[in-house]
Image (cartoon, rainbow, N blue to C red; front, side, top):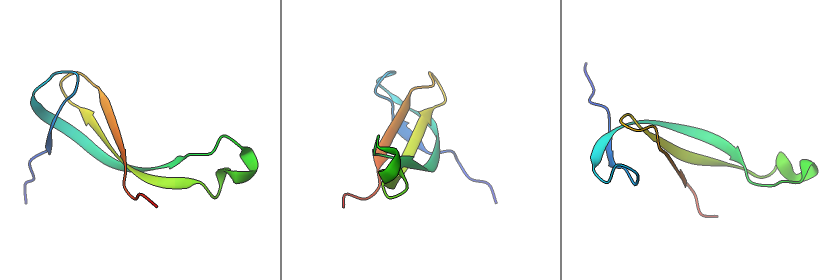
Length: 61
């Protein structure tokens, strides 16, 4: 089975380009004692053309 890489509109290029997409857990708290409770999933798309990264929080709790 072959898959086509996803395309997104790149804010830097200003056009529809291919992106690599992954999900990352990012820590939102700067305080060390709260860091383990503040991890949230983010959708991270990186433009294959210019390398610009766009991250979007996946849940808005």
